[in-house]
Length: 205
Image (cartoon, one colour):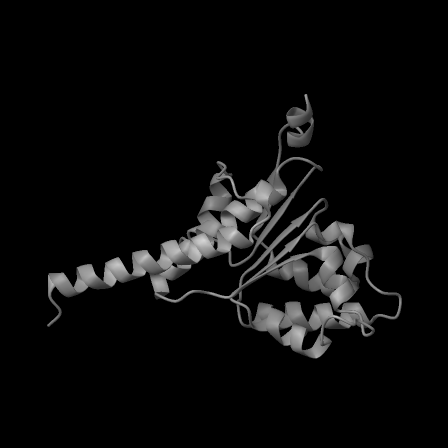
C-alpha cells in the first residue's frame, strides 16, 4: 500500500516537471507575451480543464483587445494543468496563421507538408494565432491540409486554441467552406468574445 511519503514524492516530482515545462515554454514565448496577465474566467476554465470546460477555445474580439496575450497566458496554464494531471510534458504546436499557411503550401521549401500535417494532427495542443490574417491558396491545397488537420483533431477530441478577429462562422473566406464547417463544430461552446479598450492604443498613450 502506498505511503503518504510515496504520495508526497510523486507530487514533488510532478511539481518539478510542471515548473520545468512551463519555464521551457516561457522561453519559447515571444518576449512581449511572457509577462503574466489576468485573463477572462472562461479562459481560465479552459486552461485548468474543469469538467465543464470546452475542449477547444476560440478567442475573438476587436484588434488590440488582448486576444494573443490571453492565448499565451492560457496556453501556459493549460500546460501546467496537463503536467500536474498526467505527469507528462505535452507537445504544443504554436503558429502564426500566415507562417502556417505558407508552411502548408505544396511548394514549401522549409517543411515536408505531410510530416508537418501529422505533427499538427497529433500535437497535444495546437495554437494558431490571428487566423484572419492568412489566406488559403487558390489551388485548394491549403484547404485540404487544414481540413485533414482539424478533422483529425476533432474526431480525437484534441484541444485547439485559436485567436481571430471574426467568429468561426465567418471564416469561410479565410479557410474555405469545409474547414469553416468543422471549426463551427469544434468550437461550439468554446467561443469567447473579449471586450474592452485597445491595449496597444493604451500602451502608446
